[in-house]
Image 1 (cartoon, rainbow, N blue to C red):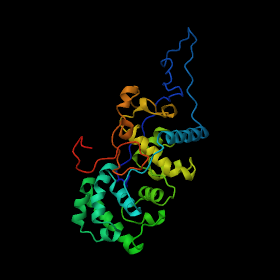
Image 2 (image 1 turned 180 degrees about the vertical axis):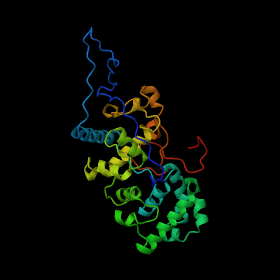
Image 3 (image 1 turned 30 degrees about the horizontal axis):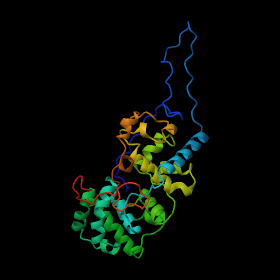
Image 4 (image 1 turned 90 degrees about the vertical axis):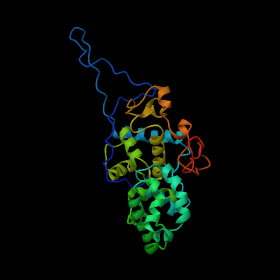
Length: 306
């Protein structure tokens, strides 16, 4: 979930024919050019563009149905306080939440407070967080933000967007993760999964995360922002994958205008499901009590030993 390096976002996936409520793709109709003067057949009319009102209604229905599918949706980083969540979110850039969760137990055992982390020997901190990748840059950010917390905020993580984004390595996305999940302040987490899905669902065509955030914020009441983020990210990680979405096993396929971009055969699609949806361990070593899947294994656990 952490701030991403400056690589451009994935291009929005090309739209496909919408799947009707019955769960089957709409018939494509006669091939182009099949109408002839002798029969008087007419080419099917192009569907009218979706109105703004219809899109908003569809978007809110998707949110409601995702809430039924993932009533246990939650942040997938292990944390016990705002500082741990802030550090874990920074570490999650360009890696999985699973790898962060497997790394942070040793990290917080060695550096439990901002004061401890601010005083860390860079090379020693780098070695602890090496499994998360980009460990030198991340170590600089962690020491920098910890120093700022120690010197400017009495060792406490601030609870406002304005203050959080002044910390090294912290942008709007990381700030919204911390605000929404450690302080109860609504925010949208526009990570790669979130951006991919809202474009596939035609809620926006924006690529810039801040523009995506602004457009989605206008569709939903503020009270929904944090949980909406969790539901969308959950769905993106489990079903609506980047390269091969499991369209045939998607519980909201009937509302998706991009149905058909991925595998539509139900049996083949089910094999693409991940984490608890596919019967596998989740990303958290310490998941919430209502999580229906298995906890993730600790770092270094042999394959099959979990």
